[in-house]
Image 1 (tube, rainbow, N blue to C red):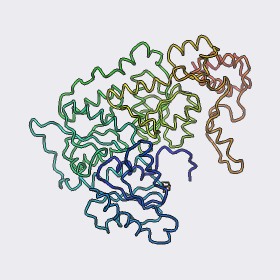
Image 2: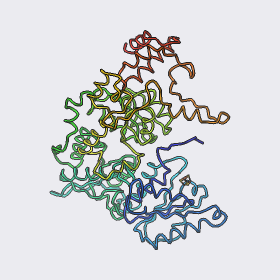
Image 3: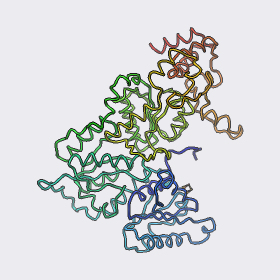
Image 4: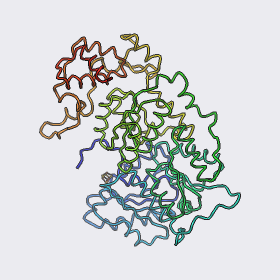
Length: 542
Ligand code: SF4
């Protein structure tokens, strides 16, 4: 058992729904208890799709458990086939149905439907949403493209003279963070290179499209979380190489173009055009104050690694922490962390993420919807770079993350929550103005009054601690002072030291406070004076 309030990913059958909903002419029959239809809302409300997901639930109830739930499944599958006439069907179980072991795959086979039926084995108690999407896509590809695989394997025939190179774009799904717009952006980019798009999948693909995936020369993998399993199989089965570069950020997009050109056997064109504003914006003098801003990055591994690269190489930020909730992609995050000389954080426990943010005191958090809440509580500016996201991150306007336009979007989105240069400078010089003061939010964000000076917002961990009934309270080992004094023995701040602390610009003050407290603890100083403050400063800047 794990005490969980927030979860970064849903159960794996939600991943399967994301694949089914992305495609056309596919239907998913899901053995699930009454109530699991909540998942429809993810698509109709968060993504605001104007149609129901192509999913039939068996919606069994407690009283059904005494009778034949297997028969219930067969009836639902038969009815769904009659009503929706799909070209292929997915069948599987949700968490609760997994426990009653009705074997949807075997039951569907017994119906002898005249279409391909893909039985999904999604272990809901070990795996999660992205894994479920990857596995579903892989099983669909194997089932539908599999019959075209030559045995024994023969090498890929060379392209006919004068024929345009052809590729598939793999990975975008329903409910994917900016997948719709990324696909539009990358499709246009690849087409401008003179390359033909064979199939995009799962988004917009039919089962017939999946069956012709093998006709392309190579694959472009946009989201490894959902597509790398299928891409590996396509490589083994059809000899199709696939791209490794994720085109997020202007630099990565240029590398992506070079990689695609190499796989297509063509000269890499110079495609960056007048729409590519981000590199110049980042170099303009207005962005100088961004240099060295301390940023913490968290999300799915693909977006976190890409964001850290953009933050450090293109915006001049200093990456002080990086992490992911995708355990399957921990290696990628460890490699990136080594690049920036920071500790990787691999966890799906948001309390650990909050503790790390509180400890690192970054000036900007790039994360998911969860980090938005965490950053709000800790008073740190934040921008969203990865799922899980809420409705506002399925915007009406074109907002890719990938390609040159994506780089423009990233620049605007990440700089927006930061206080602008002039205001930051003036507040550093003239404190105590009734309107423009350090406890007010940046004035371009409305400037409402923030937490009163000197009062620390409690972290979620502290609130959980406070509210947990004493008798049943779990032992909480994470504490914002984990590396400082033992809980309850924080050194006192003398009033003049507190006043001196407030002279430090607000965006680095939190870090100064923590360092000083840590110094006081290490040196057995019970009361922090101005002298301690400067001793600590000297100590840590050595
Ligand atoms: S079956 Fe799974 S997804 Fe459905 S309500 Fe139960 S735990 Fe949630």
